[in-house]
Figure 1 (cartoon, rainbow, N blue to C red):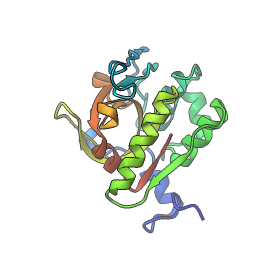
Figure 2 (cartoon, rainbow, N blue to C red):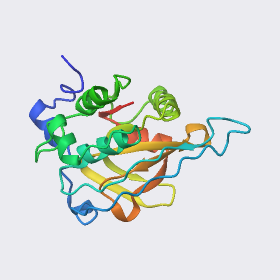
Figure 3 (cartoon, rainbow, N blue to C red):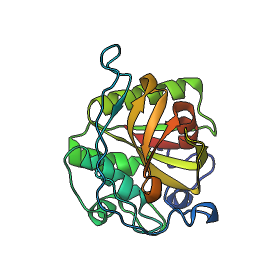
Figure 4 (tube, rainbow, N blue to C red):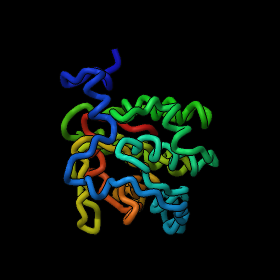
Length: 220
């Protein structure tokens, strides 16, 4: 029995809603079906002189999700674009099994990423409602290793978290985002958010990202 699909009393059918992009009214305007053109990120390694892992950001081909349930395909597609795989969101959605109920879980993003990039991704679950210190540390290690290898992380998140600029990002029905960089040795994570084309990339403290993922999982 896979714990990601059977935890906290959730049925598989329930997780299809919780794990997808069924967004509540607090983000309805933010998650409107807006499609933007590709906006590549800038790859940096500013701390290399004293610490090669101090800061790094991967370039991705950013696209906003075109509807309320395509966050999984959009986030996965961004991760693929950094690795030279330029698929459409529709193609990725078909591979993920995305429906209007969303994308089932991080197991599916891991499966598709592995099918298309050679099998280096694994799924990590944070089962509790709050991430434990060791789970925060594991997320840091996973993001550092993945980003250093040129591999963005796809995270299934839920709830509200505040970025380093003080802006809240609220997805009470669940959402997928792409983790594309880090700074401060991994204490701060760069996020590409397909539901927020006006501010598609932002930074968030590591512990807040881990708690955003709590009760869900990520592909790294």
